[in-house]
Image (tube, rainbow, N blue to C red):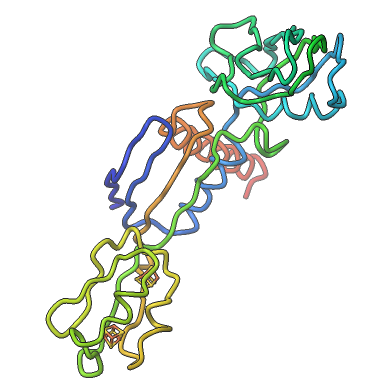
Length: 259
Ligand code: SF4
Ligand code: SF4
């Protein structure tokens, strides 16, 4: 039985504990969150006027990397959304932001309005039409829905009480970069195991060789941060659905081949 416990949830961030799952399966889901869950991103740009200092290619590249809100329930692979930009600077140093893009669809717009695109001098103009479509991170990183999607084993420590000189010695506690160790009677304990980075510096600084950092083989902390294109939980669930679809199609192919 696989157990999941929510540890932290913010608008674009999800952190949860997974127990009893094979790491290869969890890693497959992780890879699907990065490479297979589709989002909208600008893919073609028609530059109508660009008197800025920035080359057209760089401008197009920057536009492609702006995360766009995506509605997977309504968008189809063949759909295209136009985002137009038409700015003439009225003063030196005027910055063109993602919020200046005008979208043809209320469902597809920059996640953030304050992403700088280009800086203009007075009188310089940038006028263009950008076309966004669905794609996946497998094709290009600009379609990745996540900025972080990673897991780590949950650590624990083993302290040899016959060697440990606590509470007189506090080397490991004082040197832990995450501050997650505390001295208890004649020993040391891990106070916040999910924050431990498994760096093993506590082992390195222990003069007695008394502390060992270990980890549970089937217990993981998963951290997922969305770019804002999709809600974080939708990314994870969609990745699982995609994985199930791939396995189903593999099974059908096997059956067709008579395997
Ligand atoms: S492994 Fe690193 S973070 Fe974890 S308890 Fe030891 S020193 Fe601290
Ligand atoms: S550094 Fe070693 S001896 Fe000192 S408190 Fe930590 S585990 Fe014990």
